[in-house]
Length: 558
Image (cartoon, rainbow, N blue to C red; front, side, top):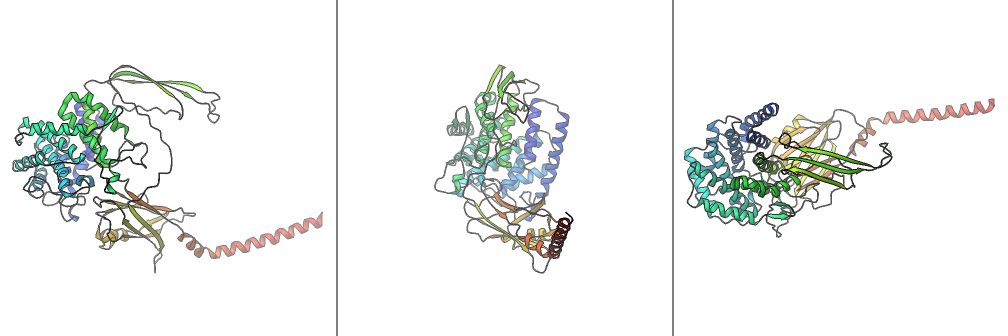
């Protein structure tokens, strides 16, 4: 689902620009159809959805809302024909099962996205979750997929958001986003509480008031909670992230804020949203995404909407880049050379990324001629060891021969030492070269109640790595114990240590890791090749004796 959503936003962008792009469209539509079909595997009989389907005890409020949102967006853009009964049962489950009499939505099931619960008390977290679920119901209404008997629950949720106190910045952004959407749909026949338009305008002002402007860029950041060690990671700069530095919640909030501005301001958001778009683009990782799949999805939703809006006035400009290429004997360049490169941006290519590789340490001169707006990002990529930080998880790993078997057994112990414990945890176990896990071991790892105290929800194996999806792991819980039985498929000499990394799915910077030593291979090798060692020793002794005799004979001859 998290991979289907970005594709939907790309297609909505192409539709807004009325671009054909047949090959891209065909591939994107295939991805959307596959994502739609695959997500149905995680549907519960009551209409809800959860991360692992019917293997979970109940559906998840957050995931059901997220599925309803993306399905509705895809259906509304005519990208896939969503079965109306699927959308209806999901919406009814949210209103009838997850909503209280006050209008707020409760976190039923596992809310695997930790920032959805705000990292604060339940009362405050309900505002963030209610805003998110209400936004999904609004998307369903916009796409014509909201059943009539769910409209009352939607109205009650809007009233709750209008009346509730939302002290955290995260909640303020989500409330502004949701109320602005509702105000825009009021003219489309959406039944809304009295005073919604005024409440939406006030929420928008509150959101704008907490914006952080640094130079020519603007973004939004969560409210700091210095009393909690876990919250120090929220809204602060990430010391181990290169080149981008902001945390996932900052990216997510800024993406929501961008979408809110476009809905509220229309074309006026072109100017006001430019510093926001500039910040989002500057915070991308070298691979093009952001911190996690979730914040990447929200950021892309905001940027694609901004790009579609700006397509009405594409740039027409020429960018000239001048720099000095230093002398290099290895490249047969005996003296420094002046280099000038020109980039052209117009209606035909302004949405195509153009990249130049520049020498490090040289001054770069850029001149621009023409009209319009474009964003130029200069990124430096280097390799360095990350600064030491306190780990979120304590990880231990060892490997030894399994008693009474020719296989090897790797044991991993995981403990959370800080953090709230909300959200899914991933344990990535890297295997030694030449080793393969036993199928029975992978099955037991998932199904045994003793594996991580029964918290293992899914186990994947690919590219010599086992990924274990852990439903919950909190400070003070009994150690999460994992065992993997392996066989040697190929003999590999001089094995190197492997790693076991544990991290939060939605906040990978909260992690812990350890190395697994291959010392066991020394004992195994000596046991299996002791005869060969003796033979080699005897051969070397014989060779020395023959060389001595040959030297003596040559001396006598001479």
